[in-house]
Image (cartoon, rainbow, N blue to C red; front, side, top):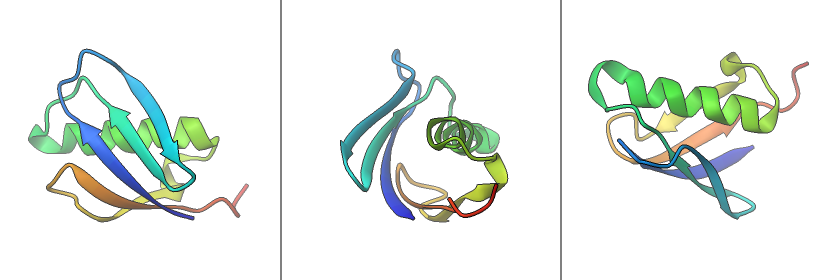
Length: 76
């Protein structure tokens, strides 16, 4: 499953807001330095979709706030 994600960095909120079936906003406290924000986004999405972190991959947008993410829902 591919989704688009808009990341809100250093946000006062924390969590995920679903906009459409394939579009989400992820709020994180983490800064973009040292990949901290991307790691937190992966962690939050894995928890949200009830999959392991290894099943969540950032395909495009590792250095910007708009991302395309693949979530493998087939693994157990």
